[in-house]
Image 1: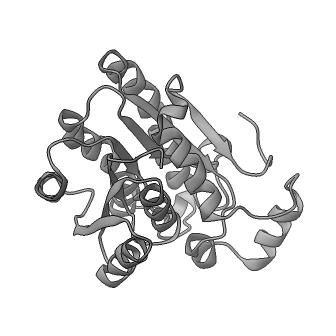
Image 2: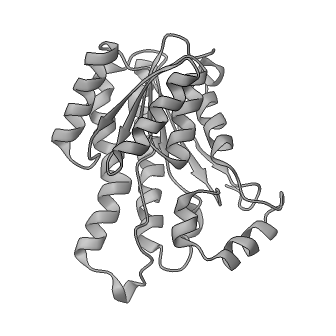
Image 3: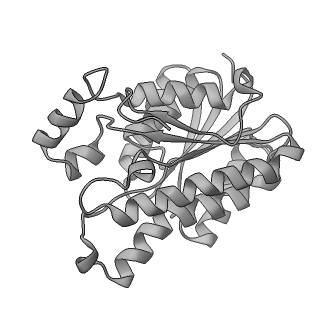
Length: 250
């Protein structure tokens, strides 16, 4: 129970990696705010999983690209659990479609940059005043940010690269306040993301080319988040940490 008594906010916390993170942090004693955007039932199911295991959580709607919604998320958090947040995990993001450079338009550009980068910037801005010494922020980048991503994922990769640089900048800015900021760069993790956007034959090929010869699991990503959220990583900040089974090295 290394997060006993702490409050954690997880954007995109309703399903897949976000759900695994929410459940894991709760299992370590944190009170968890499960943010969701388009599926209230999945968010409520995540909360139920936490409560059935003896934890405490609430589900809160917010579009993490909308400043008013972000403000409401912060208000709901303080109303439920008080005016102190110890852990912020910016999971919200997406690929939406694979498009070559000739297929890109401004609307798609704005969508990708807003969901993957703007969300992390302004959610962090909103919650920073609630965070103090010992707090931890964990952003989600991607292996795509290191290698440019797969076909048609240029904007996704670029937006996640922005998250990596933002993470380093915030580690410097927040360090004097005792707040740590790190990011994860997941590789091929078995989630709906790849069910929707990666062909089965590509997944099989990638897994075969990984030293561990398999895809990762959301629970393994959540375990790493838990470590970064806790005092066990008290001297770790400004890092973009790969979790890809050895497929790519930083």
